[in-house]
Structure formats: C-alpha cells, structure tokens
Amino acid sequence: MENAALLNAIIENAIDGIITIDERGKIERINPAACRLFQYTPEEVIGQNISMLMPPPDRVQHDEYIHRYQRTGDPHIIGVGREVLGLKKDGARFPFRLGVSEVQFSGRKIYTGFIHDLTRQKDAEETLKEYATHLEELVEERTLSLKRSVEEIQKAKEEVSQSLIKEKELSQLKSRFVSMASHEFRTPLTSVQLSAVLIQKYAQAYENPNITKHVTQIKNAVANLTGILNDFLSLEKLEAGKVAPVFAAFDLVKFAEDITEDMQMAAKKNQTIIYQHTGVSREVKLDQNLLKNCIINLIGNAIKYSGEDTFIEFNTEINDNNFIVSVRDNGIGIPDTDQRHLFEAFFRAHNTGDIPGTGLGLNIVSRYVGLMEGEIIFNSVVNQGTSFNIKFPCNV
Image 1: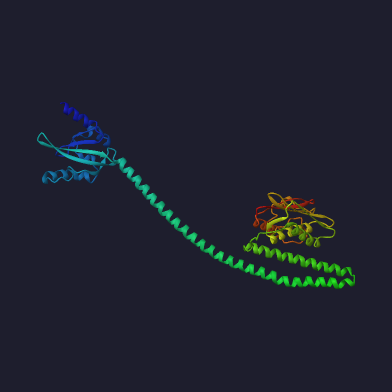
Image 2: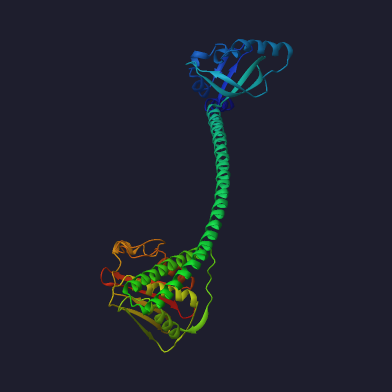
C-alpha cells in the first residue's frame, strides 16, 4: 500500500504531464500537470479517446498507430521520444516532447505518455532565431555601409591625390613665377634707381627744386616696389620650406649700428633713430640675415607709420637668459580690433590709409623669429605709438 501511495504521490506532483491510456486509446488517468497543460479537468478527459488532445492530422491517425503496433509489433512511437503538437481546450496548440512506454498490468496493456512542455524553449529558440536573423541583417547592412564607405574613401583619396598633384603643380608654377618675376623686375628697377641717382647728380648744377622733388618720388617708388618684391620672394621661400637658419656668432653692437646708419638714410625729415645697447656682452649666436630682415622690417614700419620730427627707439639687450631686440615709435598705433590679426599674411590695419605696404612684413618677421626659436610680442595704442620686442634664449 505504501508503494502504491508513494507512486501515486509522485505522479500527482510530477512537473511533467503523465497520461495513461488503454489498448483502445481511452484515457484512464491524467495527472494535474497534464490537466494544466491541456486546460481540462480529469472528469472531462477520462474515458475519452486520447486523440481529443491532438490537432489534425495526428488526431485522425492516432488509432491507426495503435492498431498497426498491435498487429505488427513495430513500435512507431513506443519507447521513442519525439516532438509533437498538443491541442488545448481553447483550441490553442503548443509543442511538447512525448515519450510513450508500454506496461503489462493484470493481463492487459497500458500505455503511458510523459509530456514535457516545450513552449518556453520554442519561444526562446524563435526569439534567438529572430535575433540571429536581425543580426544577419545588421551585419549585411553594416557590411554594405562599410563597403560604400570604403568606396567613398577610395574615391575621396583619389580626388585628394589628384588635388594634391594639381596643387603641387600650381605651387611649383607659382614659385617659378614669383622667382622669375622678382628677378625680372629687379633689373629694370635697379636701372631706374641708378638713373634717378644720376639725374639727381647732374641736376645739382641747375638747383631746380622740381627736379629734386620728382627724382625723390622716383627713388621712393623704386624703393617701395623693391620692398614688395622682397616680401613676396621671402614669403615664397618660407612657403616652400627653403628657409633654414644658419647660426653663427657675431658682434651685435656693430651689427645694430650698421643697420641704424642704413635705416637713418631712409628716415623721414627730422626723424631720428636712437640706438642703445644694454649688457656687458656684445656677442650673440643667431642667423644674421634673418635677424637683419626682422630689424629692418620693424624699423621700416616705425619710419613709415610715424610722422616727421619724431624719435624711433632701437634697443638691444643681452642678459643672463635672453637676447632682446626692441623697436619703439610714437606713430599712429594699431587699433585694438586689428591687433589679433597683425601677424597674418596680407593683413593691414584699418588706419593705415594710403600708406603703402603689402601686409606681409610682420608675417615674415614672426616666421623668421620662430625659425630662430624666439618669440615676438608687441604693445600698441592708437595715436600713441607701438613697441615690438623680439626675445631669443641665450643658448640658441
């Protein structure tokens, strides 16, 4: 009795459904788990043909399965697990794994079906399948997108390559043109300058102020054109990377005095350039040509943007850490709104008016200073003047 009670308890509390049928396919017993799966009470199914729990075509073929097994002894599903569909009371179908066993009891055959619900597993498989399909679609989409991107990048690369080739050709053409123009213009300008000097010399005997005035205008115009050509040629060399500083030691004071003497000749009426050196040492190690270009440009600007009867301060200083060049004038100054653009190529302040210039000088100066590992700073107030300081470390 205890064994029977234990067996009954196991069947009643089993997680999977258990159904027993007789040789004719009539349901003899169904446990609670199977009732929940099929949504029937035991009273609704006991005594009914098991096919009521099957959807077509298994419903109409089930009795034939049993009869064939009884005739031939060939187990079609007996002892073999397989996946089948079940039919719930509300008409819904669900998948489950069915295992059927045969038991001889009291001289008759009883068939027991063990039912394991596969709904969650199938749902999970379907979800996984959907994810896999979606992933494949995304991969395919990303692959196509990547392929298009690679094609676009390749196309852009080819376009950039062509552009670079054209730009290089244009750059080379520009360099050749600037170089050629600079040299071609220099020859006639030199001739004009020489002729102006000779005219001024030969006209001295006539003491004609008109001749002196026009000769001076010619000389100034030639000087302006020469300055423009020099600026363009310097810029072209910088852009082409042809400028490399050559550092060598030299006497700074003698160097600065020579520049002062030369620039004094270009000064306006009663403009005076005052040079002063501070420091015990006189020797520095820099590129003389680049430094000379920087100082001449700064003093030239001071002359150009200051009036007659003014002073231009030109100072050099050597201390323990730095070598400093400063140029200060009392000219028109630079408007605050223009100061941040001062070192840009071709930029000119708005208050320069008709004063000639290319807007390249300070750009070239700043780049030369950078090549010599220095820095340039300035301070300017409109109508009160401008000061430029160039600073180089002494270990350059």
